[in-house]
Amino acid sequence: MDLQDPRYAYMFGFLQADGHLAQGSGRKGKLTAEVNARDIEILREFQRITPYYSSISERTRATNFSESHTSATWSLCSLEARSTLNELGLPYGRKSMNIRPPRVEFSRRDYLRGVIDADGSVGYTSTGLPFVSLTTASTALGAYLCHYAKKITGAERTIKRNARDGIYNILYTKEAAQGLAAHLYYEGCLGLERKKDKAAEIRGWVRPADMRVAPPRRRWSPQDDETLLRLNDPATAAVALDRTEQSCTMRLWRLRTGRA
Image (cartoon, rainbow, N blue to C red; front, side, top):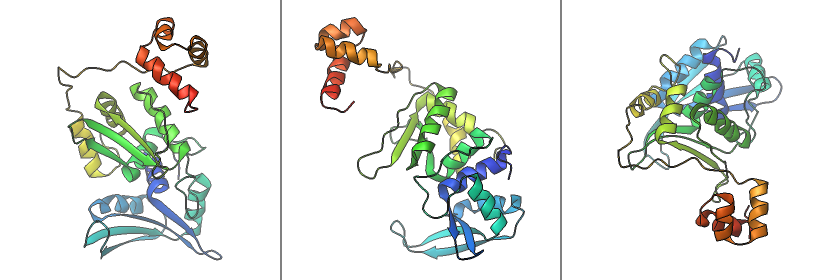
């Protein structure tokens, strides 16, 4: 499983985010990946490129969201295959907080597309803005997406767990989403067809003439914080630091309350 091969890099990212590696007694164990039945073709592609026996099954059951939900599950029992995946970075058992990008050379955009196909979204917001997002519990994975997307789009994101469930919700919108989607979902790539279609759709978005372009955010440096605390006056600091008074007021409050 050479992760420099775009197909395997994608597959590995998908399995890290949405697969489950179970370890039984002795040589027993199983890798499974369950998706909505509408996405069964991606499992068939995994089965096709995997040189070990595997099976795909379907089942219909009631869930919290539907009285009749049909899913498809890919199952792989080979010990050699499971050991390879585990060595590359797919943990046994619960893994959501522990997954991280591979430590070997790998096709980066294909790997990230696999992660986003499994645990992310591509499309339009309720207000009609194009977006690409990822929901993850892994600090390493969230930080890697932010690092990679900044190189591709120039958009900077700082990850922070939400207070409700401790999950990172990383969101790119507008031109940043267009650029990231175009890079990840290139012509002929392996992926979920519905997300490839959405990625192609958002490329046609054009910013309305009356929509303001926000300037890039300036990070607060330790020297900026030191000056702000020394002056202890947002209006004076705004002039000294070439920032808005509102920005200095908020930063000073965050420093005083220990939120920064």
